[in-house]
Length: 496
Image (tube, rainbow, N blue to C red; front, side, top):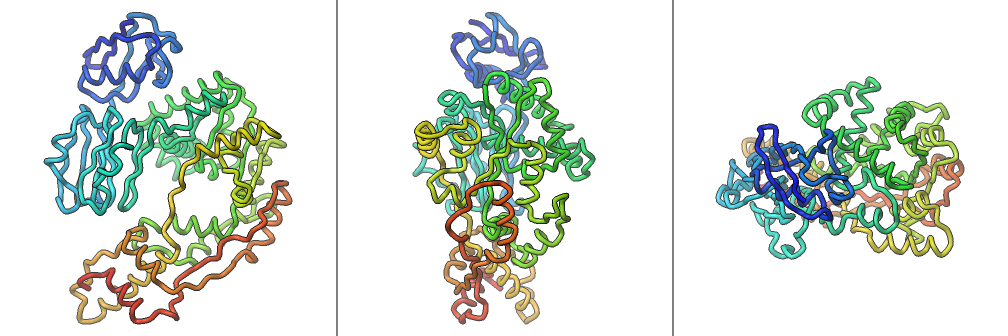
């Protein structure tokens, strides 16, 4: 069959293909002819089309004319903006800035067909239209991808940390497996849709008068990405019509209050779905420590543990149940919004019984499987699980804070001129993690601080509590630091 793909400029690509081909193939061929990156294709009726579906499923007739929305340029910078890389609309890459921070014009000039670019602190990675990945910059910050080139095929998304890249491949996309194998539709569950879930969260916040959400929404939704939101809502509505059950999964929803949930539910009034919710409890100490690390890992001026604890626990107002604990408040909101339809589980208990949170979400909360069918479902979902990124040790936050104290002390001495403009490494940098692993630690079990809240959560939810205690909270024992430890910390400040 023949399809015409047209830009607003009037340029048109003629694409001949089979009715069984997926729309993504049509997009790829149109990009080659038109020499532009295409964000999405629009039906003759003006609706965004799902590129994962076959042409025959979309009901496109032979000779149909499709509109094309051009992909916007992608820009990334190294840490502190010493180097930049830009993917132009036609897929060419331009880079400029400090070569020692990753700017390599010669490497970038050879790249064709790029769709996006991302950066670590001193290296860049470009995702190409055909699913391959090209990297350049400093080797120790992720630019050497030679050992995994065989794995870097059919990639659909990239993300970066301080010194490493990660790629999400299409053949690892759990969405397709769930939809084809278990007949469960998926919305807001993969890397791309997590970003969209955040957009929806801010969209709802703005609608309900929260200034922070409105500021974000004005830039990301009501501005250039308005089409993104429309496409997402259209995609979700299509899933609700095609599948008996559809999963929404994103940590962004943890920030919803009752009014936001009500607004979100009403956004899908056309389909009139029956909503239920799944919520997971985590040992309070582990949850607080994890949130502390998340807020600290990319900064060189992290808050102390007590500052973080005070900010998280001291500023919360009691809800209607009189609870100030975040996990209890979240449970209360979900129980009020979805009566008799909240599926609760302990993250720590699931680990004890070899059941992933994905297995509980799919096999228990969504498909309501029991007995042997549940065991089969759990095994299949568990086998498709992914390795969780390992966070730096908590002691790394202490090391950075001690480095700052050393720098301040040195600036008050005769070496002040050498230290004034020196940048302290961030928490997740390799040198800080290595230093943290060499420090003496003091570990405490803090479960008793949250016992009353934890007992109330399990009594109210009916979930099975874990048998084991949470991990000890370990921090640098400053009173046990020897001269060798201080020299290690001082080594993080070369020239100071």
